Structures are given as structure tokens and as C-alpha cells.
Image (cartoon, rainbow, N blue to C red; front, side, top):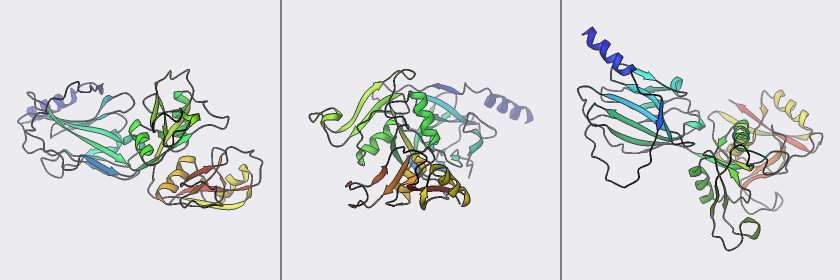
Length: 342
């Protein structure tokens, strides 16, 4: 018996490399009928940042010798990264998700994957694959974070980021570069922006609701316009960032006539920090934060969130986060928006 357990452990640990290329299907053959895995009732799991999410994968029967492999298709390069492998007795975790994943194991047929403290980069497509030595079969699930996409440019103007700088800029604002699916969804919800920006896969796009002359002309139909893949080192554009609500956090406004340094101190006096751009967008989107007061943010910009448009709050007809740009940090004109985790 001990020898069989040892062989099972060695077989599990002799796993394939951590990543492999995920090939998109070229034809449209009917998927093979599942013999051992149950088709998930809900292939999309909705969650929030900071929550615990479970992706279901249940076997209807246990093959004599088998492994279950969980992997994630990375949206930036379509590589399939292994997360965890189990043979029912032993398991091994892989990659950056390793500290935050486990198998649910509510019964002997349950191979569901539980992710704790869900992060922005966890969103995407996952695959539960049964490997039994003869025929493999798998089910795919999508982890979806409710979020908001926003355009971002630095203090020195538009079209200053190469890809790597855009990626870093989004991360510094409590967000990450948006995927194409996230940008497309934001466009369907009303995002209209004439400046082109990087997204996660290294392509460049801009979403247009109202066709107009400076944005490709009146003759082009509304849509997500694309420049395609660009040189990640040399080409320079803005960025489209994606952020999501963070459980147990709050953004609030401190009134005053503060310069940038005083604004930071005012937040610290309340046990908070100056809000980042992504945090303000999240509060506007998910907490309906609505203030007609411009306030300093951590990147040196001044913005204010409007959920109910009105004449004396920018005059624009649609809700959004308005911006006064990046004024001199010595100006004592604005209050500040602070961020605190409860």
C-alpha cells in the first residue's frame, strides 16, 4: 500500500512545465461529450476583489488512474499557466496563484478550485482538465470581476507611455491595463474617448460613441477603433486601466484650501492615504460617490466624481469622474480625496 501511495505521489509531481501555449481552435467541431466531468451549470462566476471565489469542477465518476489539472489562460499572451494538479491523494500548486488557491474537496468527486483574496489579475478564463491516460476532457469557466475602465495619461500630456510605462502607471493607480473584453464592455456602457491607449495584450485602441471629426471623422461608425499591435518599446500612447471594488474600503472628501503636500497630511491625520485614481473611479462606480468639489489625488491630479450630472458641476450630461488635470502642487484651491481600508 505504501508503495502505491509513493508511486502516486511521484506520478503527480512529475508534472508538465508550468506554462504551455494555448491554441485557439481553427475549426468548429462539436466538443466531445463529457464522460467523467459534469458540465458546470453556471460557466461564469461573478466576484469582487478581496473576496473568495470557487470555480466548480465535479466528477461524475472516478477513473482508476487520473489527474485533475487546473490552469488559467493569460489574456496578455494566451499562454496557459498551470495552477494546481491533483491525483485525489496528493496535490501540487504552481505559479503566482499558489499561495491563494486550494481544492474545495467537499466530497470525493469534488475538484473545484477556491481562490482567496481575489485580485484584479485573477479575472479570466480557467480550465479544469481530467487526465486519465487515454482520453482527456475538460470544462472551461470564466471568473468575472465587476469593474470600471478609465483612460489615464501622465502629468506631461497625452501619448507619453510606451507599453511597459502604461502597465506600470495603471498599477500605481490601484488598477491594471484593461483587456479588450473589458474595454469593449466599457464602450457598450458609454465610454467615449478620442485618445488611443494601450491595453493588456499590447494592442492599442480607443472607444468612440459619438463619431466626430477629430476622432476618425463623421463617416466612421461608433465602435472600439484599433491601431492593432504596436512596438511596446518605441510607440507611445495613453493607457486604459481597469479597476474593481475593494471590499472593506472607503473614499471620502476632506474640504479645504490645501496644496498638494497639505492634502497628503490631512489624509494621514485621519489615518488614511490620498486616494489613487483607480480608487476614486471605484468609489464613483460602486459606492455612487458624488461630489462637486475638486480634490487632490495621489498622482498630483485634481478630480471629482459625479453620479448625478447637474449644471454647476461641470455641465456635462453624463455621469463620470471629471478632471482639472495636474495643476501646480503649490495651489491652495482644492480639498482632497482620501482612501482608507476599514
